Length: 348
Image (cartoon, rainbow, N blue to C red; front, side, top):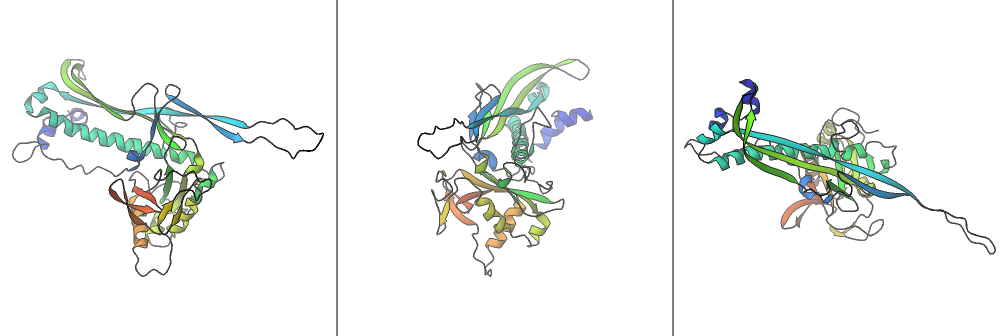
């Protein structure tokens, strides 16, 4: 019976979802998180089944100064092919048909349960996009942190070391979303995004092999991550959270360093983002977003609202983006992601 109560909806779950008048209650999801990276993601179909392959130029051809009566040596560029993989997160909801007969508003009852599954899948996908690695778990995807995990790697220039050496480190991410930057992928011929599928009444077996009928519903999200140009992202790693909260970490200094690592960044003129002032002038406004957890966000806001501050660094500014007021840094939206841990290992 304990197993049933842990994995299957029972009468107690049914009645816990009622209010004082016996109607379905408006459930407050105390486990909901703010993982604002998910709505920002750009998603593309894989070009090779469940994998996505792309090619980067890893070396330039050699050129020479010409001389009369001397030929030109042959040369070529170097190319490297990168393969990104997809994986899927799924859940199964089973409601005994006899339990369903008791509930007069079955659709609303099942929607209550579906909201929990959708939140669970969203949190797991957000965690995977940040931290998971298919090298250690082949059935999973490779997120951002494993790709920006070494200061001495080829892309180590995109990692800013904030100096934290303890066990309470976190990161801030600058991510540029786009077809030629960072985007999510889904298997060729399938559908992107979270899928909820109602299988209606099914004949199922209990733990003893005896049949009964149940309403079954599956939830699945098949997704992956592809970073086509790692120069368009940056990570401020090794932020000591306790030092940050104590006010001894100059967070804006590290954000500035990360900003100037972005390929195709914008300049800011009197608080307004101006395209074309970066490394190559190909920055697409609105595609680069800064992500941090609530502790970093609060520390940034505390510094930004310090009326007695004598410094003049660039702080958070409110802007209207797509009809909503959001906080921005150098014209880029700043969004809260609760799955960003305060227990990250030090990046070396």
